[in-house]
Image (tube, rainbow, N blue to C red):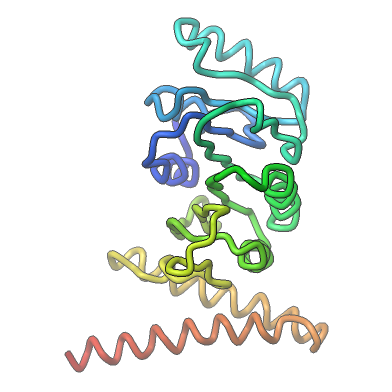
Amino acid sequence: MKLSKRLKHIEQMVTLRYTHIWDCCCDHGFLGAALLKRNAADKVHFVDIVPNLMVTLETHLNRLYPDVSSQWQTHCIDVATLPLVDYQGTHLVIIAGVGGDLMNEFVSAIHRSHPDMEIDFLLCPVHHQFVLREKLIEMAFSLKDEVLVEDNQRFYEIILVSNRTNEQAPVSPVGEKIWHAYCDDQAHITQRYLTKSLAHYSRIQRGNAAIGGHIIEAYQAVTLNRNQMGLENSLG
């Protein structure tokens, strides 16, 4: 099962070993299967609310991984109702393939239901990234890592956070590390994403002047910082 560029980046961001990894909205289970194959956790949980998908996936997993059946489990449930308390150990909850609004509901419900548990969340919304980041800031989550990926002509922010507060690692409303390009190709990706984001929220603001102003200012600050860094590099 070959992973898409987006799923491959998500998989690569799982660098710690967890007791339980929850692959939520797992669809065909490609991501969870890759994590299971490299033994990234004691148990990988595949979660989706669509019964037919889960029946097919369980059959597939039984065929591919019969010798490690104790290391995976399927759950046909709402992501908001993950039974983390029933499983001792460290937890990573991966949610991808849904928008930031719905992701907010999932993360908020999980955090609210397990206030005393330390949980890492690996999140990749398909849109409404700013809304998601604002909610993470409101809940005082801390940032562990973040990347920007372009896959099939779409941009994705992948955000790894903890539900434990760390004042030294706050979540930025527009991201911080995602703008640090490590090569020319990534520099082009970040610039195109920044241009697209500014254009998107400018259109929203033209339709309703009361919406989007603070978001535009936040992205404009990224532009200013990038320009200042470019000037400093040229002077250096």
